[in-house]
Image (spheres, helix red, strand yellow):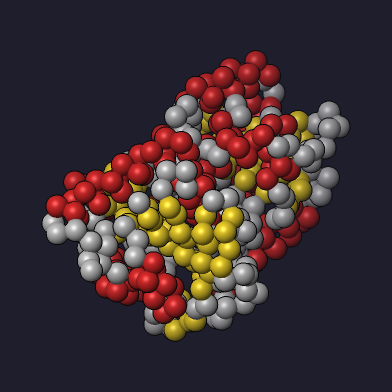
Length: 392
């Protein structure tokens, strides 16, 4: 079977969708032929890109994956489009086309019309997107565009149960929805490069891109409360800066609150350094205002970290309040600080929560994700074959 995976950005860029697409493509490559088609850019913040800047090699084979990076351009009404990507996918004659997310809808709607193959969508960011447009005056128009987009898919993969009602609201029937959560790339945890400072202080970790919905300023305010409560700690805020202004705001707030000796902000850690953060920090915190099913929490639980997080999206499906961590309402630094203090001051509780985290995240691995995704592909190919086979 030949699969064309289409994603706006891809390795070596780092980010939620990019990391998921890479992990899935790598795992699938041992089971079928995978081609990744993506835009040729090194920039992760699409809102700042108006042309194909800093191009990478247009074709590359890495980790068992054929990677095709295509030039693109920006049109004010249509956003980012790549006619060459559309032509390349069509010419490759895949059995299945797998779209990762909603980020370049217009380009992918043209792709649906150009390539007569079964289409699969992984609905990354659906919950967050729905929250953004709920109060927008453009909501009817945006909803109509998304409805038309969804009609072009024979299957939709949701990463969390919370996406089912949203997809139903948009007119997508339940028979086409399969819930397959993201997994942990276990190979990522085999290499460790020492990064966390070993000076006797307890360490707090947050892994999230610097963007408006991730709540970094709430976390920094909470850390200020923890510091004023007499706790000596070191916090590591790690993530790609998809919104440079959010990154600068976080740095300025930490400096204004006198946390220079307590808060480090990092945007360029490699995987081995990040693994050291996961394995060496006592506590994981994610203060997001919107989430679907955050991979960072899954990775933190994989190594046994207790978690303090906001009760948004699919997070309560991972973090069980009082079992492997605590849940608080978004936008409440005082509540974040209170729960962090409870765990920082109670070694026995952290130990128990660590055990529960490992137990609760069993099954969240890319082997299972790839097998379940392949089952979706095979079902669609079989159905297409029964309706007349591949187009000539």
